[in-house]
Length: 87
Length: 142
Image: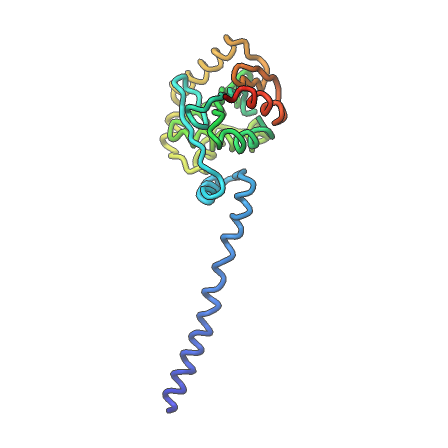
């Protein structure tokens, strides 16, 4: 009888000790959720794309024979050519 | 394209109605030239990476005037690009010649103003609000 009580007590303590340890995992997903609203990666551009497929469609991209790059459907009816520099 | 860019992407590019082409201008040489080469080399690994690199440079343009060669390599690494492949491309004659050729062709076309937009044959000079693009795109769509 005492053994059963002790075992039960031990299991209860074990459960109590383990419970909080598994709880703190949920918060992380809420942090990137805000990042999906403003897709401006700072130094980690890899994280937003993986989280965005559901909210933002992946826009196709490719390289033209002249060496420039495009984004959008290759057969889009309107082409917007931007001449600019990065500075 | 600054502010209008995201709206054009969301409204027209995502819908498959508009395709955006970026033509690098490098009139001032220096880091303008290096940035164009760096983006080109990102694109040699993956066309989507070209735009990731392009967007990164746009978001960090204030840092670019003081950037050194390592800055462009470090940026490639931070964007998970293959560093040896990027570096090889970055210092290659092929990449430099491509950017030089594109700038020469841009001059031949008489494009001097930064930025200049050619939207379905309609020229726009300088940064423009979304409405300016919107009007032309609407008229050009079938």
